[in-house]
Image (cartoon, rainbow over all chains, first blue to last red; front, side, top):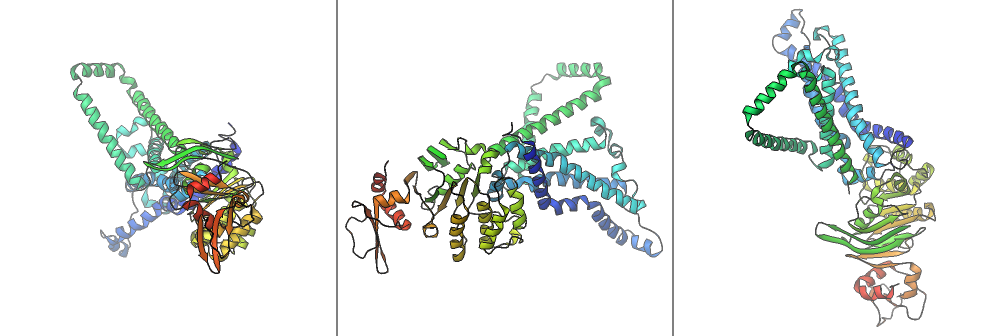
Amino acid sequence: MEKTFNINRFGKYFLYDLKSRWSELGIFFLVFALFPFIFYLIYMIFATLGGGGLLELLYGGSVNGPSLAVRFAVFAVLTAVFVIVFPARAYGFITDKKAGSDWLMLPASRGEKFFSMMLICLVVIPVVYLLGYGLSDWLLCLMDKSCGDSIALTNVNKLTDDSFQLIGNGIPLLLAWMVEYVSVFLLGSLIFKKWKTGYTILALFAINAALTTFFAFAMSKLDFSSVGEYVMNWIKDHAMKLDLYANLWVDAGLLLFVVGCGIWSWFRLKNQQH
Amino acid sequence: MIEISDLAFSYGNNLVLKGISTTLEEGKIYGLLGENGVGKTTLLTLLCGLKKVQSGRILTDGENPFDRSASLLEKQYYLPDEVAPVNMRAGKFAREQGAFRKDYDHDKFLSLMEEFENDPSRKMSQMSAGQLKKTYLSFAIACNCKYLFLDEPTNGLDIPSKSQFRNAILKYTSDDSTIVISTHQVKDLENIIDPVIILDRRDVLLNASLQEIEEKLFFDYGNVLHPESLYSEQLPGGFIQVYPNKEGKESKTDIEALFNATHAHKDIIKGLFKK
């Protein structure tokens, strides 16, 4: 066990890994975490110049800041971009001959390196990003009251349709979604040598297309009259717990997906050669 | 000790190493010589665990290097031909990476940087290729590892740096370290490598100490051509010739001539050094 995982060495390695990731990703991370301010400036410039905003200002009026709905839409898009881009920027170097060799030869065990990578990618970076973004947005709303409520203090479900409530309220949903996508894009960045994010997206499309074709074929072979009756009866019997079952199903699926990506990433690291 | 037995490796259908068996002992500076593409870098990367052995076995102190255990990684350092320009000051890089190696000596790193006339406070990403190489060389030597694998360490170094490198290897490495230096620039490493390993495509043509080489081969620097010469080359004022040392005469090995003689007469040299 000492050979595979030494807690002191892990602590040392984890700090080294954090520092290295910060030195590589610091600027990129700050741009994303401080984006509410950047977006606010852009929005106010356009709001002032267009739609009569300038005239309003000239006649002593005021221009309202971006509303909660607008800011939430920006947050959703930006978070999606962040989640699919950062894993390759953080650990994509492992497949590079020069930097990857250095990393593989660093005296820490494979388990320590893997666990540190997963902890940083699945927990540290998403949480710090959400905190950073939430804090920026909250400060913005404090400075300009016309923006309305901050995203962090809002129940995200209120902004979305009811189907999202299947997996609880906004933050767990967001974290679960982030962890799922970070896992798959981290795996992609360990598999592909170039165009890591692009190839991962293409691979996801291909897998989706293959699964859709498979299920469409399987469904075409089903006798819907008997299956439909069975499903309807099951729903009738379990109507009160349908939300719970759906939650469990989604959570189990998500957990399996993340664990599957983790296992694949582990073997990818184990067999990485330069 | 590193034991290599019946090692084979190929890239797809291109067989690079085949049937390589040898032992690398402690306290020696091995010169790994060979033409371009014979598998010098491949062998080094197999020795340090960056590649997986496809057939045969490598054992470093009884461990498979591809397991990349922390304890074995701590005992070895591999310096590739091309190194990464990290976005960090050299001194900070060395201190941070050195923290994982219990024998790392930061004062030694700073002394080596000074000998190489290199600035440890400079960012590595702003260094020239030669300065970057010298930074990594300083760090590699300061790690005080038991096993040091250097791939073309003098590539990119200017003339003074090459002699500084030779001095650094002799002055700063420990007597019980095993150092394997791969190169095709034999003149750069003359006087420091002993034993010499000459790789051919898929084979080890020679693995012998300088003493063994000088017992079995005579390096004649005279100006009369010898009919038994395995290799001869005209030099200003005479020749360098290599022929079997039947009379047990003393001479000094010329590694370039040895390399050329070995390549010209593979079977004779292999026969001479067969154990």
